[in-house]
Image (tube, rainbow, N blue to C red; front, side, top):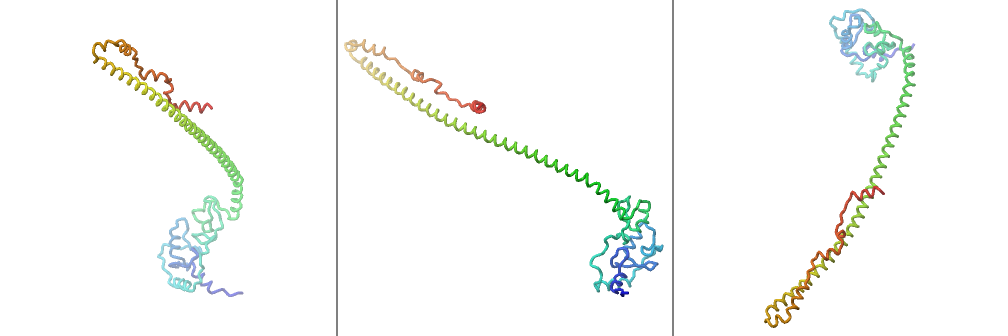
Amino acid sequence: MAAADPRAELLEEATCSICKELFTDPVTLDCGHSFCLTCVTRFKASEDLEKWCPECRERLDLEKELKPSKRLSNMVEMVTKLDIAPRGPATEGLCEEHGERLQLFCETDCGLLCVVCRESRAHREHRVTPMKEAEQEYKVKLQDWLCPLREEIRYMLESKLKEEEQYNTMRNKVRAEKQKIESEIEQLRQLLRDKEQTLHRELEELEKKITMVENANISTLSNQITSLNTLIADLEKKCKEPALDLLKDVRSALDRCKKVKFQGPESEMKKTKEKEFLITLKPEKEMKKYKGK
């Protein structure tokens, strides 16, 4: 039979059976078992547990003053110096409160229990089953949920795809309408540019006609003014002549006065149609023409 490892035995003796870690401020109960001061204090504060030793189940009077164990403190210090303590606490699968293996499942609270928890007042009236049985039962329940959940996610994926298609269709319609509007606006701009060029040409032609009519009227008025000035000068000269000379051809002078007929600019302006001088730009009319195309 193989000899026990003294280092492992030393480590076991320096480990608290409640928290499964090296003793911290160890204290010894009347039954002889030792625990961490914090573990015993927490155990004392529990109202749902009977007051007995967590290791040997001997009933104890936990109201007595707890005395520290100097010997165990020295042992813990020795284990620490020898570096034989495990790097991490191996507490997986153990009850955090009692350090016992978790073997039971509480149906009422849906939680794992150790045998000590099972006897506590908190779970004494609850329905408790072995962990293996609970595992199989809840595995079936969870698997029963897989089918409807997969169906639900399939429906949601289909709905998501339909939503994306609808939004893409709406987005494409908006883009098509935007391109249509931009095209129409560009056509309107081109229409306005063409109209602008046409009106510029018409206005230039109108300006030329105005200048031509102006020159004609001014020339006519200038000629008439010259003729009248000449007639006035002749009449003034005639009035200064002696009676014999004045009366000799006075009839001729009077006939020249009678033949004078003044032609103002209105008579020349009427020769050009009035509508040729009136050009009005009406954008709304041009828009109607464009939309009707």
